[in-house]
Image 1 (cartoon, rainbow, N blue to C red):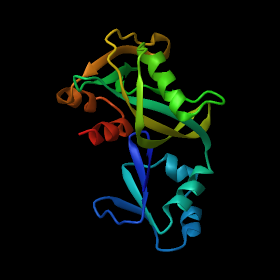
Image 2: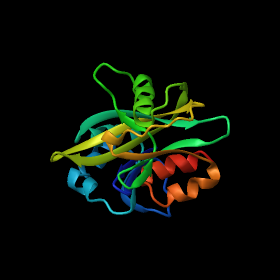
Image 3: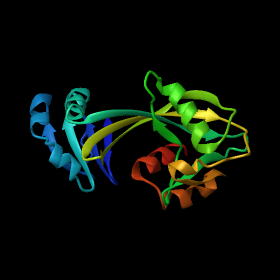
Image 4: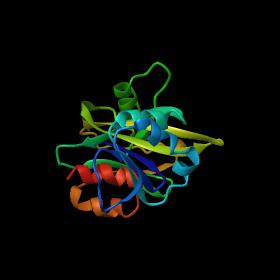
Length: 198
């Protein structure tokens, strides 16, 4: 299954019929015809959550991906020994630290670098890949599909320094009991990751 976010909306590509969501396209065996039916305009103007049901999810996803400029990014879900998670407050919304890969950088290195830069922490233990998210957005009149690899991490740093130059005004350790305030003011793609932590 693939889930691509467009603002607060989402496109799900899967082999399974989720009857609670509106179906955009159904193709039982011909993924090529599925792709030919989906325009970039249809994707960027998507409202709510829509499903594409198809036999070959990866082929459909790759053909959609080919319509956009690609950006790779990485981020972290950082936990300490108190079972608190590290969140940032950026441009009026709660978020998780993440950023684009530099040239020649791999996902793991980028995830650690971005967490250090955005949160001011130094000691990080990298864990396993937790989630991959996809997000379509417009930047400088160009439509981009961003893949973000999210890694579990550990840190005990208590001195947190928000990267103000990136619009981050707060960095905070939060217990799971405090996640509700984050979920009330975050992005749909981030909410999905947070809910997966429960």
